[in-house]
Amino acid sequence: MSERDYFVEMDVRSVEAYELAKEWFDEVVFTKKLILDTEPDWDSLKEELRELRRTYGKVAVLLVTRKPSLIRAFKARNLKALLYVQGGDMRVNRMAIEAKVDALISPWLGRKDYGFDHTLAGMAGRRGVAIGFSLSPLLRANPYERALTLRFMAKVWELVRKYRVPRFITSSAESRWEVRGPRDLMSLGINIGMEVPEARASLNFHPRSLLSRL
Image (cartoon, rainbow, N blue to C red):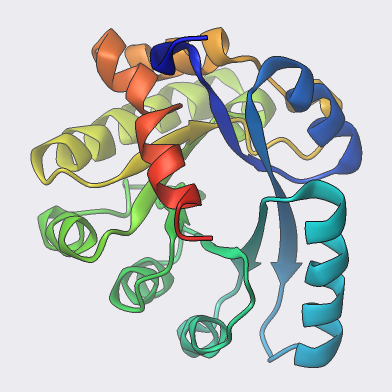
């Protein structure tokens, strides 16, 4: 298999999604989603992540929070997992980049704008914070929401390209029905303005660079 045919799925959030994604991708990251506004029991979380690493190998934590300070608390811990932050709240978007998390997922989620600007893009490029372009919210959206989200994704992609921000395209699947293969994810990238090599790099070069942090 050539390097260009090696594909990585960076964010699947259930056992059934992981098992299906493994059939289509060369590497898959299992994501533990945490919805929190206060600090967790760190010892319990570390033990759970240890078990997930034994089962899945590559593991990420997705932090969904309204408390920007919680991002720094997670970053300060050695969780031996990639740290993703769910975007949407502008304060959370900014803190995720300032704290140098591994990836900010869908900074436009739930917004009436795209939640990302030249300042944040420049900072993300300098600090090596990846932007995750997720497919699953599009599958759950109505036609108006889908068109708006695609427009926001295209705007963010323009900034990601300009400031050379790391990125990946992912299903962010929470069920097997939301898992999509490399061809579909590349099509999403092309639909928001990526050239074919750029879309391919979003499933290969950039994900593999992030995985090298583990």
